[in-house]
Image (tube, rainbow, N blue to C red; front, side):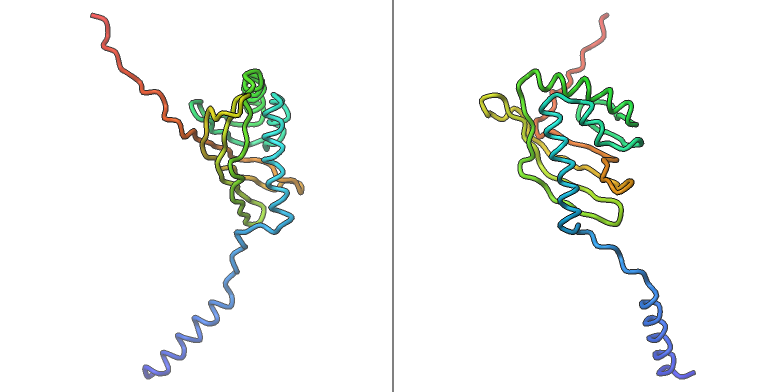
Length: 168
């Protein structure tokens, strides 16, 4: 076989391989899916600001994982419910509110989606008491978007830990 024939066979092989390859699913959500995904975050903020930890936890899948700043990982809906029932109630009694600042980006690939953005906690006077960023991963289960992974980080530097010498 001469070099020209080999080149033709190679080109034809690549063409057939490309034709058989699956097209990657889009990573941008349709307008309807994006609205549904964003609605979960809106419901989260509304329930959290009301101190309704059970309503917040209802947005999470049974096998979800929560990574809150300054706390150990929380795994599973029962543990997430326990976490939010305590945390949201305490937050609400302070008079603080949380809001997206601004609402973040949404992406989707099949039955998985994600939202990232920034948040701001304010006190009763409207002053910012904390701000940071978040990343939430969703999975469509039975036609409904559920949170499966959730993490956020404060922009406020954590308190530095000062090691003390052991008593002599």
